[in-house]
Image (cartoon, rainbow, N blue to C red; front, top):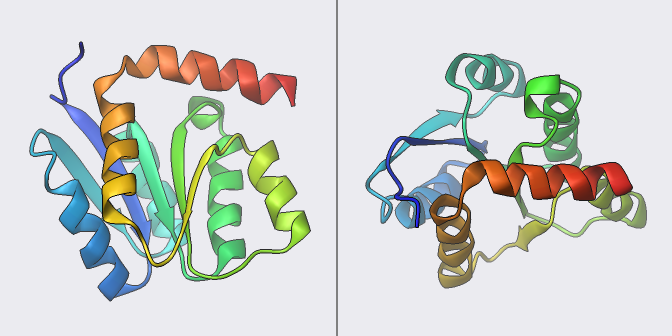
Length: 143
C-alpha cells in the first residue's frame, strides 16, 4: 500500500471557520502538504505552481466552486484531477448535472461529517494516485 508521503493537497476555501474545520481533519495526515487558497484566480496560479495530487474545493457559493473546477478540467494537466467538493447550500438540478459531468464523485454538504470526510481523504491518499486518475479518466470520458 502506498504511503501518504509527498502528497500535495490544494484546499480552496473562502470561509475561515470552515477552513479551520477542514484543516483539522487534514492535519491527521501528517505526511501531506496543504496548499491553501481563498481566491479563484490566485488559486489557479497556485495549482499550476504546486501540481497537487488532490483537491478539496469549498467555496461558499456553489457556482464559484463549479467555475473553479471547470477551469481545472479545461487544463490538460488537471483534466483527471481528484476532486472533493464541499457545498454550503443546496444546489439546483443544473448544478447537479454539472457536478456529474465534471467527474466529481465525492461531494459533501455542510455540516461536514468529519469522520466521513477523513475516510474519503484517506482513501484517496492511500491508494495509488495514478490508478485513481486513470479510473476517473475512464469515467470522465464515458459521460
